Structure formats: structure tokens, C-alpha cells
Length: 596
Image 1 (tube, rainbow, N blue to C red):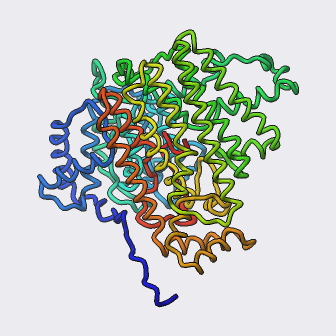
Image 2: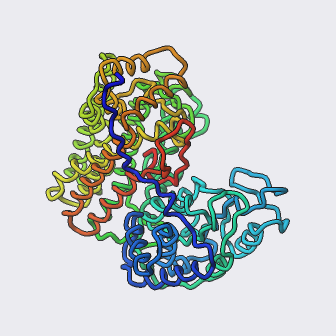
Image 3: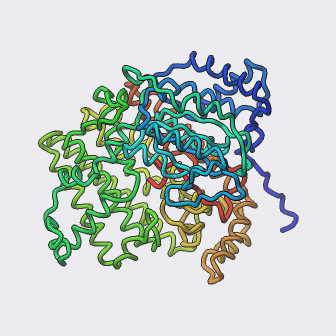
């Protein structure tokens, strides 16, 4: 096959390392900082922004200043700082987090050890970490010393803090931007002078400029989805959870240990714990967007009240989702979910099947329990849409299992159709439920399934890419989907481009008894030969563009903004490397939607 033309390499994602330079002199850094402050005054402060918008602003600033493109990342961080600075300073100290990187410590002779929360600094005076940490803690800050920690946004969503003062290199700040900024979290970042991750430096005065400052505002300036993310999270807090879904057979500890109480105990625990509760958030946010969107203007310690009826419907969405995960894990023989062993491995297959079935019943019961508040017609429509979503999901899962017993032929269209059936219906049901509780769905009847389809397909493709990097949220084993004979779009793209001999080689790799690491390495080389990773990323961008095009025509503006937010959040790729995924890449995301 040496005479065959080699495929043209299409490097969709260009390297960004050349855009992350920090000016060498303090004078030039201060010059860009001052210009960024003036630039931010021209911006509309009503809505948060995504990274692509911030990049556009950064380019405009550099062009106005006639500065080189290499300072783009630096300019983006500073513009973001001044967009949020006034609101960050209005947050009480005890509601702020100071996030410091371990690379500020002196690499040689540092006496501090790491614990579950990061670096446990001793007040030894050996580095500047202790100076910031001691002062911040006295003021009331929560302080975390852990580079790129995955718990930061989770802490915000849980309600412990409202804003972040972060010190990090530009690489880490870039990875944090999408998930933190588009959620509407007031943040202020001080870039390190280098990304060497060892004994680096920073402009210390920039930290002190904001660390000790507090200037209250009468009301927030920028809309934020954090309150609603918190509301979705609080549905699963113990007291609220048991109000919405009272226990029947496990009201006492003794009853929970009995055989008759086992199913309810396991099911309630599985429903209440694990996951990001993103689908319930979608339901609450759609309902809120079409009923005045008052929650977007709230940013404080007090939770947003969600009525029992609306809360039960949102919880039902999660119950159906969790049921599908239990069954999906059994059918795919997955080992891990939410960083723990899957239910069928913790217990046994029969118990797990029963728990999944039980959760379907819980979902129906939650919706019918909401009838008195949302109305019987709305409840019936929501149940009908949930039933349709469930059937589609089973069709998709069935198609996947049928493919596994076939000759392993697969086109990209086949894979995308399976994705549309397996992933999109839950997004559709979540959005539909919120819209229907708010009133008529007539204006959105066609848009909702199309939007959910594009977002769901894009999300699943990202999940395929994530599988080749390892997944700290779910499966833990890199390449598991490929080696477990799942019909992924990556595999379909490779088969589409491969010769007959190479197709035979791919099928052999999928079914052989060779060690998994060897099979994965050989399969990766096939994928790279045909530029599969970049082609898949291009499909994600198409899904994003189509979802955004649908959102462009949506009214009211609050609902349109929600659809943009969902697109940006669900399709945010946490990997920012410039190379194809590697076997030892482990993503450490700031979690809103990853693993949703």
C-alpha cells in the first residue's frame, strides 16, 4: 500500500503556545493592565461571556495598542479581570476563595506536605505562599493551594464561595476560563511570569491590590447561572431531597438494613449522590428563563426558592438519567461511574437492574406528585416526552449492542444516529419539562429536539475524545470505549478512510486477545494516520454552530442566552493541549457539565 496517497493532515486546532507570552518588563505589563481596565469600561456588563468572546476582545485591545499577538492570553486575562473586578470586590471576604499554585513554593527544601485540599503550608517564610495564605485566612478567605484543582467550581456550586482570586500560569487560566466565566463567577486572576511550574514569580502588588479590598454593591451587575446551579444542587441535599421524595421503606436505620428496604436504600443513595445535576439545572433554568428570569439577577448567600412541584419535575429528570446510567453500565460492562465502582460491580447485576427499574418508577411518581402545582395537562405532556426520550434511548442502546454482534462495519452517519438516540433525548426532556411548566411549548416545539440533538451529538463526540485521555469523573480507564467494542465516531471515521486491509486490521485489534495497552497503541496510530481526532473536533464545531444558529432565533432573550450558555458549557472541551490525545493524558476539569 506504499503507493497509496497519504491523507492530508488537517490541523484544525492550531497551537496556542505562542499566544501565552507574558511581557518581560513590569512597565509593559502595567501598560497592558491599564489599557485593559479602560477597555473593560466599554463592555456591556449585563451578561457573562465565553472564551471566544474574550479572545475577540483581547485581539481588539492588542491591535489598538499595537502589541504583538503573543500577548493575547495575557490580555484576555486582564480584560476578564476588569470586567469582573467591581463585582469581585463587592463579595465579602468570607465568601471568597484564594487559589494559589504549588509552583510558587521553593522547590528545594519546602517543608509542606500535600493533603486532600492541596499544599498544607507551614508558616515558615520560605516562600510567598505563606504571606498570602496567612493574610487571606485572617480576612476570612477560603484558601486552596493546588494547581488547577477540580474542586473549585464544585465548591462554588455547593454554595460555599461566590468569587475566586486566582494565581496561575496562563496555561492553567486558559483551562479555567470556559467553565468559570460563562457560569458568571466573579473572578480576578494574577498571571505568573512563566509556566515552568517551578519557583516561578508574579507581580505581588497585583495580589495586594484586590486581596484586602471590599467595596459593596447595591445589586449585581452581571447575570449569573450560579444561583440556579446551586438550586439544582440543593434539590439533593438531605432535608430537601426527603421532602420532595419521602422515604417509604427506609424511614429508620433498622428498616434500611432489612431485605425489603435494600432497593429503596440503594436507589435513593444513587440518586442523591454523584453527578453534576446538570439536567435538573436545565429544567430549572428553562422554567426560570420563561417566567421572568429573576434568578439571573441574584448573587448571594440566600438560596433561590424552587417550589416543590418544579423541584420534583427537575428531580424526575435526574431519576430517569440515573436509571439509564445503571442499565447502560451493565450493558457495556463498565467498571467505574463517578469515580467509584459501578452498581453492578458493587452489588450484582440483578440488584443493579432492579435499582434502575426502581428509579424509572421514582421518576414517574415525582412528576405525578407535581400535578397539583403544575397542572394535570402539563404533567401528562412532560411524562409523554419523558417516555419518548426513554424509548429513543433504548433504541440507541439497542443499536449499539446489535452493532457489537455484527461484522463491525460502521459509517460516521451510523455512529451519529446512535449518539442522537442515546444522548440527546435526555437533554430534550430536561429542556421540554422546564418550558412546559412555564406555559405553552408551541413556539419551541421544533427547536427543542433539534437543539438537543446537536448539543447531544457534540457532547458524545467530546466524550469519545475524552475516552482517549482518560476520564477522572467516570470511567478512569483510557481507551475503554474503543476496546469494549463501542460504535464511536472515531472508529467510524477511521473505517471510512481505511483500505480493506486496514479495516481488517482494525477489526482484528478490536477483537484480539492481545494486551489492551498494545491494542490501544496500534489503534491510536491508525486514528492518527487518518487524522481522526481533528476530524472529530471539526464535527463538534459543526454541532456547536448548528446549536447556536437555532438559539439565534429564540425569544425571549433570557431563553436565548440560556441556550448559548448550555451550548458553551456542554461543548466546552477541557483539553487545551496542542497535540492529539495521549495515553497518559488525564483531564482535570472544573466541573459543571463534564460527565453530565
